Length: 371
Image 1 (cartoon, rainbow, N blue to C red):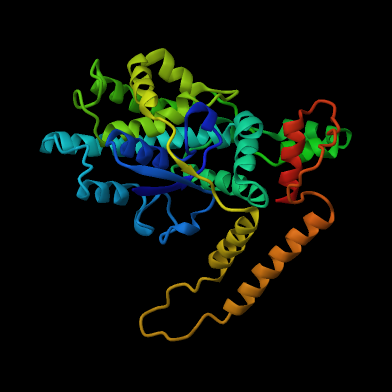
Image 2: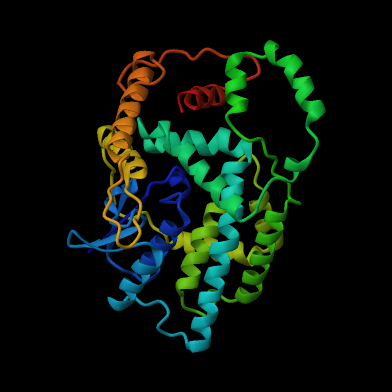
């Protein structure tokens, strides 16, 4: 039996067993290939030798990590969904997969992390619940940061970023003192973006969806009556658009209104995605260790030295002490001041309401101030 280690899912009640499209794609591949497998939900990538999920193991030995490496290993093991494809179809499959991974992932990231209503009301609270304490303190914000970096690298910005905000700033300065501090924390912790259907990122996603819809046509699968790697990948991405309920769902509206054959296609595969045998993740103490390890490796890793140079990094010890000391102070502060604490089986106390704010916004603001 194969064991697949993938990110967990805040949408499990929707029949999705990861929030990461690559992990969902591999899960769909295993299911369509009728492999014998079980799912391990992990809340950090420490299990992976490359720091990349998903990871596939066989008899407790790690065999591959990352989407394409896992797929290639399964093909060598005899689970090849593309065995019936000819050379031209194989090339087409690779091209369409690249299109999906480049175009749809950017639109998905924008919709989840850059549209404030979606991130504040749904994505961040669910990710926080999924990861648990203490990972909930940092991981949702880290994921949002990674999304912003990717979108910025691809030159994807909100249309309103270039507008003249002088008058808005002057008006806000006069009213700032009258707004409760908790409201300022909540609103100031996120970039405010509206989910406009005319945004260029959705136009690019629409072009990708149109190409996929034309390729699929009225067929059950993209290359006929049998599934392929392309089918697993398309499901892995579009399912995360179709099934989670978000306050602003422009992407979902585009698919359901313009490409009903893609909806029918995803529903067909979704009905085959029976809940796999699942093994739970680790404890919150292990999560704390993962945070410390991740931050130490991030800041204390020695950069590559020029050829012929044997001088070590003179700042390495200082970096390690600074990171570890900073983390200790950080967690000590938030626990001592009662900002957050480890979960306990106690009767919940009523949460004070702030006028004009939902409970989710208040909790998100507290977490933002801690970050």
